[in-house]
Length: 260
Image 1 (cartoon, rainbow, N blue to C red):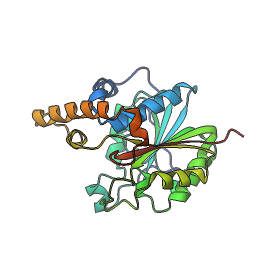
Image 2: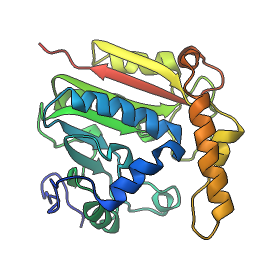
Image 3: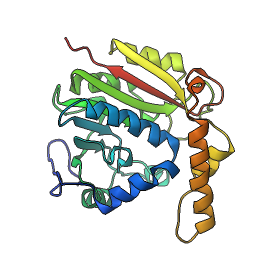
Image 4: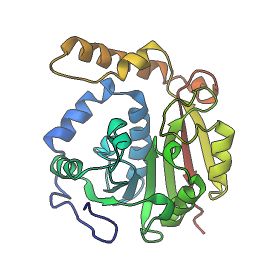
């Protein structure tokens, strides 16, 4: 049985001084990683640096690579991997993932099994909640957002990404929906007063090639993937892309909880 919010297990290695070897490698290779993670990391870093000892909750984060090097204390929550479909789609968390993450990471304080649609996490306990490509998997999306709002401290921020429903057809068997920009804005605005939703990540051949896995056994494929991500990162940096419905593959949204 994996650790839950009622049976917490903390990382014995955190907090540690400096980055681990794994984390340093990730930071050095970041320009060659998919640009969605790079954009989310940049936003997280800005937010965390504005807070002292920020408490950050990563919902559905599994290994949570995009929080590497982010100053603060990371709590990861996810559902337990228990079905074949979860295995096939690389969803949910396993005990092996938890052990590996604790060994590799210095800012991950806790990894818990928790369902954000009925979360047992305490009120007002986090400065920031992040959910990367998670909400499209959730049937009860309003309950999810309500609990995110509940566990945030006043003035806390919610950062998330999801496929761009204005352009990307839903062909994933586990995706409940793909949000149009207006739909996602409306959902978040039902709980948060300050909401921003932008289009992100240029689609096309470079993005497709960049998502191919890296392997020391396939050096050519790895090199092509790395260089494709570098090119896609440049394509995705255009300011005009944020308002372009057709073409971008994702939505990136941020919401701020009222400080009163």
